[in-house]
Amino acid sequence: MKLYPIHISNFKIDGGAMFGVVPKILWQEKYPADENNLCNWALRSLLIDTDERVILIDNGYGDKQSEKFFSHVYLNGGDGLEGALKKHGYVLDDITDMILTHLHADHCGGGVKHNADKSGYEMVFKNATYWVSKPHWESAMNPNKQEGAAFLEENLIPMLESGQLKFIEENTELYPGINIRFYNGHTIGQMITFINTGEQTVVFTADLIPSVAHIPLVWNMAYDNRPLETLQEKEDFLNEAAENNYTLFFQHDLYNECATVHKTEKGVRVKETFTLL
Image (cartoon, rainbow, N blue to C red; front, side):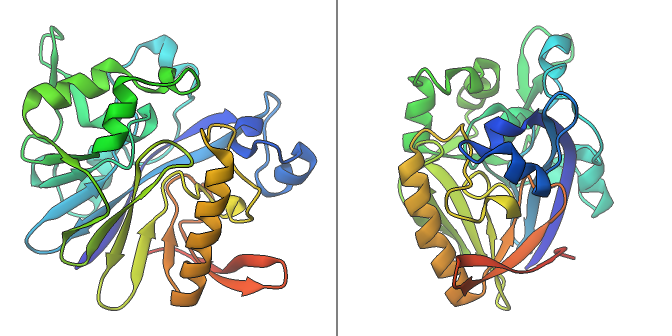
């Protein structure tokens, strides 16, 4: 099994939104903001090649939204989706499985594009099954008022109409060594992928733990729908990660691609940071 980081791009979001109740005087030491209070974050996916399947976890914003839309997210840097795949010797049509942790625009928008004459939409990964959490899909179809704007019809309905969409209904082993677990604090039914390579377990932490800075239990995003549930899920997960020496792969951390954690007097904290390759 081979794993490759896919650094699609970076984007900017308000620091207060990313750190919730944590005061700026604390979080800006770890994640500096610009004059508009914006912090730069990574949009990083993960490619898994099992020899039999080529699996991609999440795919970024894509490029089909309006100029006004992108003026609010300030995309910068990265290799682009196709460029990052090409860097490791893959093309879009090689992807057999597209695991979507959840359906917020920055995680799934790159899976659907305009067709040639922009009269409709088509799938970016023509040979892939798109895997989505069933409870999360149902939530996205009937969203709450807080996260409704994060679910864009043009990202979701084309997946359903393509016939390539399949649902995961509960925690499961999707393929040998690739396990999916549901977490509900950030959004209902977020899917976190645990990859057992035979030598290590790598966890794609998505928005359960967006960055190293979010490892302390109360350092959570204002975007979380159920903050107390996020806190408990993180505590349980981080204890497990420390006990089993998991490699945490961060989707949004601009400065740290991976880390391991260990237990300290202050709780679970970073042991070391490193790159996957």
